[in-house]
Amino acid sequence: MKSFAGPNFDRSDLANLLSKNIEVLRNIVSIENLEDTKSFNSQQGSDIKFSPEAVRKLEDKVSRLKISFENDSTILIELPKRKPVEYKYSQLGFRSNETKTWKMFINILSSAPYTFEFGTAYFYPDKNKSTNRQKIREYDAKWKLLDELNKKLLAFFRNEFAWEFPLGYKLYDYATLGNNGERRFKFIVQPSPSRDHKVSFSEIEKPFLSLDENELIIKIRQLNNDDDSNELPDVLVAAINVGVENFRWDEKKVLKIINH
Image 1 (spheres, rainbow, N blue to C red):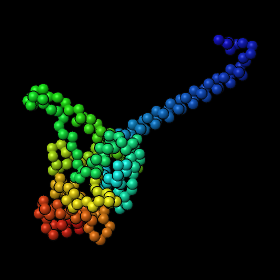
Image 2: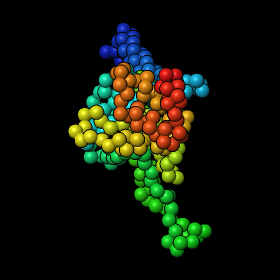
Image 3: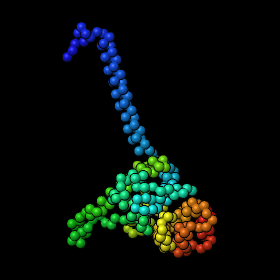
Image 4: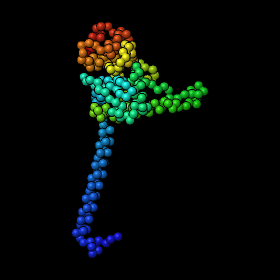
């Protein structure tokens, strides 16, 4: 090792060397502090505390969002009081329209009544439900796909609409009157306005058949508030018809709901 006391290394050389090394160290520390700050801010942002009122407002925003199937690569997303916007799979964070997660999403959006279920988690080869229980692999695989889909949609809504969500937030819940274990998305899934074939009235009614009376009233008021035309859209008419058929609403009751 070269000695600092050598004839070719005076005090000014030593001072310059130390100065440069100190500057390098400062830069390293600054970069590390910056990375630590970014990491801390990222962790803080993912652990935002939500009050019950904030959660209620978030749920209201999600429930007013409309998403519809356009084709195998594209969906339509509509915010209240705005025109539908077309989004491709890549804009939602999917690498291909052939991924299992994207296909799951498209299958749900394109199949009325837009609910989904994964069956049972176990089967019993000897038909004795007290012994020899075996796990159904497809059940876990489908739940993993749904979890991935949920994460991608949450990330998209954050980036596109600046919406924040509590940790562990799910964009789906149980279908109230559906089969045991059946789920549905919290946002509105509806037929695409640009699809060539005409959707039957019974198909339009299906998403509302699983709602209880209070949920149906909320959906009708949302649909009525979102519509700017003088005529009732088919979706709103279908929802009202479900109320008339299932809960025996009369004309007075219907007018009270839509004029609320």
